[in-house]
Length: 123
Image (cartoon, one colour):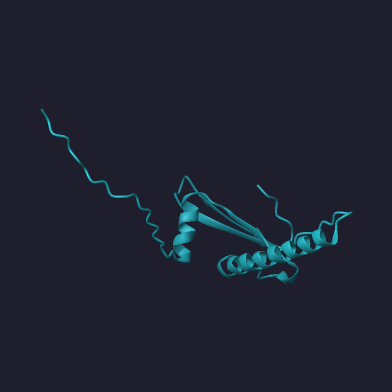
């Protein structure tokens, strides 16, 4: 007759290791996995709905202010790390797109940055 075996099992734990990634390394990872970056600094138009109560209008305004502050923060992060307009004044907002590609014949990889004051199509 065989004796029962008892095994101690450690409780499951989740380890989250945050790793600092340099700008160059992040760019290489984005290029490797084919992630294109596209952003705009243009403000979104305000859509007013007729027949709202005062509380609904205040809530809509507060949500708009929060979204604007979040957009400014994201815009600041993207502008610090992303392409900036050089040949025109970007004060009225601009669109920017970064794409990666490669030449299959020569094996060269390349990065294309488009920054313009015109609207860029969304893919």
